[in-house]
Image (cartoon, rainbow over all chains, first blue to last red; front, side, top):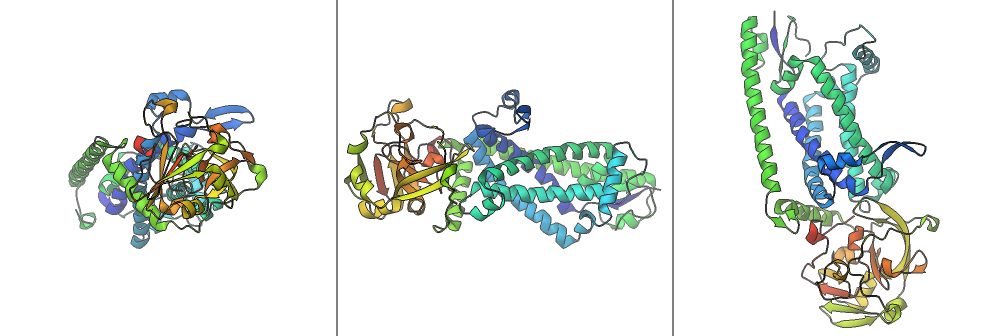
Length: 223
Length: 258
């Protein structure tokens, strides 16, 4: 027999979905800024494996010569991005949702099992909890990355007023590189996140939209 | 929909029906929210321009400026670096550099609340400050450079007057011609103008300034991006009216504070 089970609280869902266009806007405006000094690349010795970014990429997305516009959007959206992030962290702690999200001492082993399973190297099914170990690591990391983006961003936005922070990141140039690397991190997170959501299927995705999922068992799978 | 639903015994058909209802409702709300967001962004992006930006974005920059002025402290200094790390910065701007300077006979005009002409000679006689700091371009690159010059604070105390703002400009009064014959000008809030690391420089990396780097006198401020660090200063205006700024008229932030 099937039953309807509450999975994701409303504030979590709203903040999650609000963050989607926000993060997109931050990355987009960030690209407009980055273009003006696009010095990063993955290099092996003197050989450039992949430049950030090839000229076709800028052309295809019309990113060039829009620095001022990029900065204006970036420094407007940053407020919403940071406020949404703070609200999420506060809510997650106050509501107790953190208990599902923070990795515990079993999470690492479980995360490895999940990764092996998803790569087709293990037949052990991920545990049917709300969030398995791999998810706990992924979702906790991405929040820490958000904090990292805010702090490295502040370090390059006000490197004199927050000189101590800029120094803590190894100086202005390192802070800029870290700020960029974190953004690449979001893109990688996004690719894995979307593939996993597609793979896990409609019921799971729908739970992030409606808050409810349908389960087969008599007993609720959590809470 | 409440959690009570979870406890009630529903048939599989009822579960399916209830989930479709919830799904329709949530997607409708989501769709409406996305539309509202899209409309908001479109509205914002299509507002009339104020100095190269849709005015709401310009307003946000002005709000950010107020926040920055609130947290600003003149005692916070940019870190200094060992001299060995200094290097020649890129020549990034040539606007206003068309008049070749007559290095030693140059006269800096002080206007606004006062009307004076200060010979370079008098500026060189003021106590100089040297600093090896990181020059930061708004484009995202930075370069450690050694500077020598007179703190603008000292210059203003001796030759200027109290004012809310300080405007600096290349010598030419004319705005015509375009390209290199254009005038370059920047505006400073008073607090940033009198920051101890805001200098009127005549030496770079131990050598007299070259024309390309703004001889005979250029501004360097560690609390501003490079586009505020005007080369070839000819006029310094002490004023209570917020001075225009070359790049702030072209979509960039007026404050540009670091």
